[in-house]
Structures are given as structure tokens and as C-alpha cells.
Image (cartoon, rainbow, N blue to C red; front, side, top):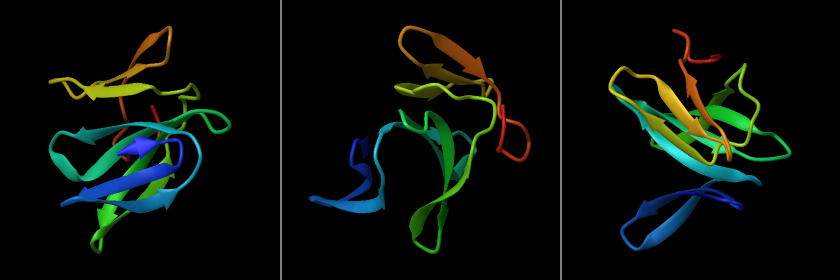
Length: 102
């Protein structure tokens, strides 16, 4: 779960803080890559980052270069394109092979 206080993992009836940071807005799991999640955030950072599940926890692997807008909603379609709602825009993005830029 993403909110203004950071990222949280919900386990049973508890919200466990994963990353404390201001401005997280949205999350999107990636098809065929269950060990990765895209996270969207707002100012001051703006943009997207890639989270990686490693050793039973989520960590920020990298920020995504080439997209620098507030990401309020993130969805991946069947063709693995990423759609980001920025208010008022809807942006269609495609991650590169190393998942570090669009």
C-alpha cells in the first residue's frame, strides 16, 4: 500500500512499514515479473521507481529515468505497456530491458 507516509506491506491485520518516504501515490505489480513493483510518487521527487523483492523485503532498486510527473495511478496492459495517470494526463510508457528508463 502506498501513501504520503511511505510504502506498507499488509500482513494479516497489520500494516508493516517497508519504506518511509514522503509522497508515494500508487503501486503496480508487473506481469511475468512478480519480484518487481512500480511505485509512483509526487513532489518533490515526481516520477516512478522500481521496487524489488529480495530476502523477504521490498527495496528500491532504481528510479525510472525519462518520466518526471506525479504518478497517481499505474496500470500495465496485456502488451506490457505501462499507463500512468498524472492528472490531467494519461501517459503510455514502455520500460526498457533493464527496467531503468522509459
